[in-house]
Amino acid sequence: MLRSEPVAPAVTAPQPRRRLAIGVGGAAVLLAALDAYVVVGVLTDILDALHIAVNRLERVTPVVTGFLLGYIAGMPLLGSLSDRFGRRPVIVACLLGFAAGSALTAASGDSIWLLASGRAVQGLAGGALLPVTLALAGDLWAEHRRATVLGAVGAAQELGSVLGPLYGVGIAAWLGWRGIFWLNLPLVAIAIVLVWVALPGGSAGSRTAKTDLVGGTLLALVLGAAVVALYNPDPERSVLPPWGPWTLAGAAAGAVLFVLWELRARTKLLDLTDVRKGPFFATLGASFCAGAALMVTLVDVELVAQTLLGKSGVQATLVLTRFLVALPVGAVLGGWLVARLGERWVTVGGLVVAAAGYFMIADGLSSRALDVHLVIAGFGLGLVIAPLSGAVLRVTPGGQHGVASSAVVVARMMGMLIGVAGLTAWGLHRFHELTASLDFPLVFGKPADEQRRLMDAYAAALQDALRTEYREIFLITAVICLLGAAFGLLLGGRRVSRPAQR
Image (tube, rainbow, N blue to C red; front, top):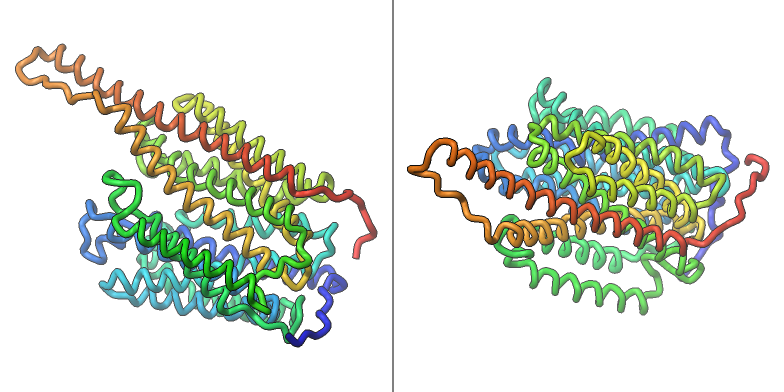
């Protein structure tokens, strides 16, 4: 394979130019992150527009899962392409793809499949913006200066989860739910102009290096099959959908083919020759655990608020907001701490703090302190964003930064998927187990006081079953965080120094 001399990272660029470049990249990340969550608050509007009954909500879930599928599947390949062709052209191409997906979504008419396809294209293009922007930080800042920048980019991603539902509801009230996606077109046009002006040209890697299209396609298919297999529109009947076992088998077969291809291929999707493998895989393990904990929280906190605390849907979302607001705050502080403590100890500390938060949530589900406990858990998970991003860049060569950053994000997203699958399986199993001997009371013909007493006792038993179920789920989440902290111990250390600013 022909090789050329790598292009040096632009760490010598003027500081204002570097800040402008990473600011524009972060804005692109935020735009894609917002669209990952905008449909949450407008699903009922979409149901009305497509003439779907409210009790058939599962029919529009591909609108959500389609974005997630595209988001995960395209990351490794597009991150690798940015190592070859440069960050600027890949970000511009992703923004164009994001605009195309937005237009398809907005113009989908009454077709649920066109709507889901548009969302998948949005996710495919938007998913690459985060790892490519993280890799851009590696290009523009020397190792001892980049941690805070990585934290800021991570905060932009997390901010999308905080603002996305509110942004979607606000724009829908102004322009209708399709207006959310039409509005993306002028926003993308502005972003492309800013990216072209602000980002440096050239590549951090080798311009003549080849891209492993076969490996990238195989990995995308494996991830896509795993997403489809773990999606169950009727989880009460079984853990997996009817097509789940066969799809998982296909994903496993594809994973074997991917490994065999990577062992024999001359051009690899991720060449681990010069990578410190122990810290690299430890980073992926910690990211996987953090993603699983995040998804359990996103799903369960609103359920706890509605079932145990008796709150409405909007009020339940406000309860979850405590957790979501703490995430970007932790991300920024985590970047600042990495420069002083190193990636290992910030990762371990963040996941231990998160575990403590989940232990407290499990022991105080109905207490007024739940808000504080959610802030602790969210803050702890936020702390690990920058150190994990920095660790993977530190142990990989510059020409692999794009795909390495993709690997961390993919590991996190896969943790989210497996976390929600495990949540569904365990939660339903435990609830049915706890209520198996609980029969609805027969109150007909009995005095009013006796009816009230029986119904209150039944409701209290259901509440106890729910409380036990959620308590166990959050305890398991705390253990997952501690497992992630154990992975964090394997990240490897570096001496924290303060060299002269470059």
